[in-house]
Image 1: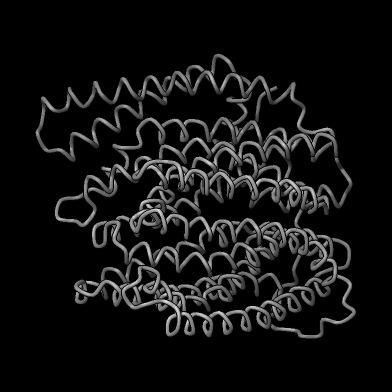
Image 2 (image 1 turned 90 degrees about the vertical axis):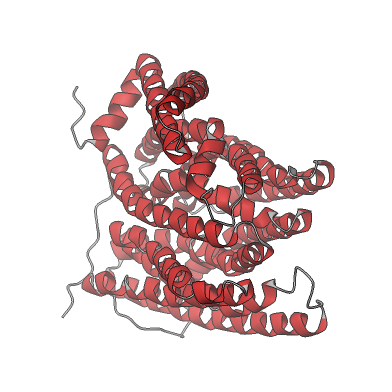
Length: 542
């Protein structure tokens, strides 16, 4: 018989970074596998129309994943589940889990079926066979049921995170990349002359991966005493009603935002048939450090904030926010600088290989998108810290208001940039507008939280921000000058281009990181010591 679920103590602010490091390490495996997957796709398909069509088709099930799974549902479910687990025990928490799971299965099964029928109708009666849009629909029909599978996986992830089991859930996304890699290597080579057929096989692998992502999380869930069942008695259930009430504003905000993301992919396809592929290649590089840092903090902080909010310990919550903001800023900044200044050599190292379909022009398009997106890592991470705090306080309306304003501005900027920017740069406008809006949203959320509980204290955060900014400038100069110098040096030692690129990039990375750490140590000594001591699992000395 399974052991009963137990309530886990809330993580102390001093231990947040350690938990985030665990999640980040697990997420790193998935992100690296994602980069490998995109390397294989770049080699086999480049920025072809088929690759762009697959990316656009995959956006729709991902929309539902972010809307019902990792977005509104997770943000609403974890605080309520934590509250029920703390106050009413595991039996009532199990019933809540079963009812939410049953509701997910019912709603997303219907939505998937309707989506498949609409895609069939559009394919037969709307788009001509030679249209670039027609290639999207067969892939979309195959992958739509993935929305249900990944949302179930996200629900299980939320329950495990609420009980402070982060490692299993953080590792789960790797299976999507591993299954897709197997499909690319084993099933695509015989049909390379028919890219659509190749991508249909890859689309089917996405469904298989969804099943695997649910299955691997079930044993630890059962071990913690959560029964695997679906309940469909949703009427007059107060806890389910609380989840839905919290979901409603978040889902509205997320739906507008995620629809905007989907529209962005359509705008990219409209701008150029290669643009969605180039954007995804850039995003996979940029989101590697974001997964290690921003997503890790967001995963760990939501249950921590939920416990502090349940205990009405606003002082601890405020201290946790300040601590997480400073830590995420110090850790994220060097990645943002490196990927901006060294965007082209990074893209060439990862994707530009002899004999592949990814060409030098593809590298330039991808480099431009990466350089435009990389500065946003700082603001994306800030939002990952601030947004869970509002959800833990049962305040989904503030992120909704901020998000709706941002979505409107983002969509407006996207249309303006696509219409006015020159060819070869239109797709860059899409990521630049995302970064600008994210920066404004982050400041708006920080100001709103300060009014709510008095955090963050700018006297604690601003000095770190100034110090890190100066360190970023120094690091950027060191990276630029160092890379050019090291290329000249290594060219004298060997004429093998890949070795020269890798050696110069590594040397420039080491030099610029040393400069960054030196400046941060001089200007943000206490904050840096705090980060390093926690990552190394040492107690901070008095």
